[in-house]
Image 1 (tube, rainbow, N blue to C red):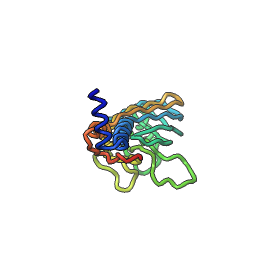
Image 2 (image 1 turned 30 degrees about the horizontal axis):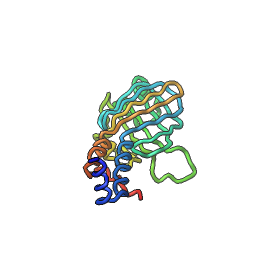
Image 3 (image 1 turned 90 degrees about the vertical axis):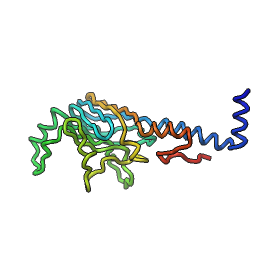
Image 4 (image 1 turned 60 degrees about the horizontal axis):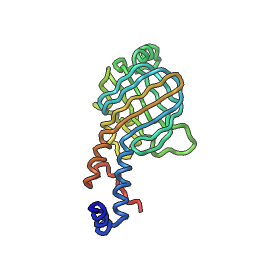
Length: 202
């Protein structure tokens, strides 16, 4: 009985639409916490991202097409990953003048698919180049090359993402969880929107 009375008072004082918006925004915030992506390509690899500072893996893969959702954004994309022991051999065989001998792992998630349309916003993704496990891009980001984080509604929310991905032959899978978005989800119950993504839905 008390719950019904409380619900009635909330609807009268705040409006049922406001209550509906509140809970829909909480549901949306919870969904933003997860990354799930699957695709096809070729390779054999395993990669781990633990915040923007740590990125490492083994093997190599090229994902020709994948589909997924990250931070609430659905997308299609291309990605690649080169790790130990493959990357040192590729560096040795490279004919380019600039060789990054110190890099042991490099990965780029969220490259746009080829299209005739102009892509203004790339898919959610990131670029990482590591020595063993330390992501050099988080320490010294490039000035003119691809940005470290791109395509996210709020890149600051993606800095503390954790994810694993692997390729087995032609199949690719990537799963992740965002500490930043989860913090936004928790604070949202108290009216704090650090991600800036709450909106009026009707």
